[in-house]
Image 1 (cartoon, helix red, strand yellow):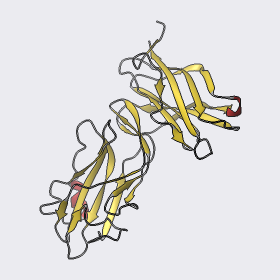
Image 2 (spheres, helix red, strand yellow):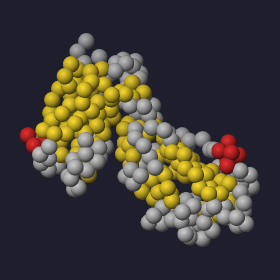
Image 3 (tube, rainbow, N blue to C red):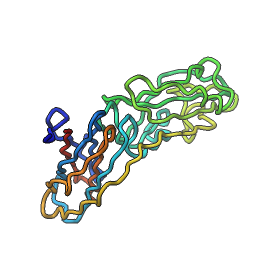
Length: 257
């Protein structure tokens, strides 16, 4: 049967134009049939007179991170959680979240105890910090107990990982008022540990496409027309422009039989 376009008959585009960073497009897998990658279009917002690469991968279907994420104490506001920019999959859709600092919902962790928080994100890009069940009642006696008490990922959200917080010795720790370890505000946590979720495994397929973007955008069918097995998705990455202020975008055409 001749392949027909999926994703409502439209090409699948990267979720954001990337300023001097890797632009990524995710085409979700089909649960009952192979997915065919028919073509790619990659371009920059201004002339980039250099050879750049477009690299293709397969990745198991399912929610998760598509690249590495780092958590840390906020630098703009040390009472917040800082997240680097990341790509992720939520309910079969590839999405992008810019770097941000996330505000805690207020709560008091009893003195000399630990707390644990799950970080997650939904399709709208709102990051949720879910506290452990006893964070604000009895706290946890040690970090191991806190990790055992790690809350589940909220429905329809993608887990970003979790982190643990030990109060300042002899004092309580108030979320949204006191800073994580490394900050300087209020009763600073004596120990904060971050456990970002492991990114989904991307397996490179075929050779990277090398194109001189000084000639214009790359618009071409994929040599040999590539396909995945059922329940396996495609990812394609366009290299960073190399110039601040010059954004990159990539689009994939996919189909199922």
